[in-house]
Length: 253
Image: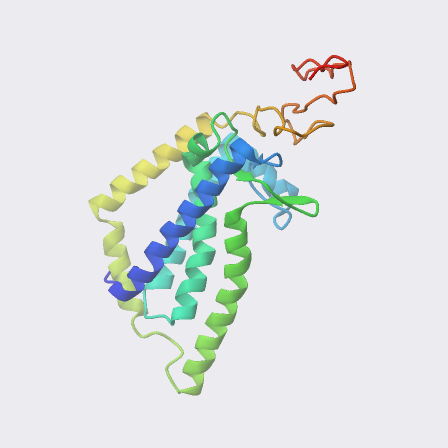
């Protein structure tokens, strides 16, 4: 399969940039943001049942494998024929956001959030939910991609271009040949091994085991299963159970 070099020069650097920006933000948030917490998988859209599947070691690993396949197919479909620039950019934003969140589950969380449970670091608090930079790319890229795809289709329709790509059959045949290539087999084995290792080591904390940010006072910042994090008010001589930090004595600096 031969993709347009010009399209690859747009899509792959954009995907890499999104991953670097998101992973850097998560690394910073785990160490400095008071709202940082680990999302083990799922969201309000898929519901609590699918979220529990993602959080489980076995079903979560199977869903990770499924996500890898879906994202690989999405990149393949984006690049298999010539696309307009708006479709390429918005598609890369959307796929890049999903990819970098999946990388967290495949092992990047060991780097960005050491000691954490398998999942993505969320730290942007909006309403009742928490998000990360990758989610912002997804939220922005998805509607833009839909609009760009519809606009591209309408332009082709108005110009009288064929609605069905006549190269699909040959593309599928070439894709089948690639699937049988030894390199593809090795890559599939490596991906399966990575997911299996992640499934066997999915436990950990869901919030950073750190004290509250310097200068803050008041109650603990909590997440589901998170360690208690707090700094005692200067006027109190009472210790909070489990905090592990004694309260400041009256008159202490």
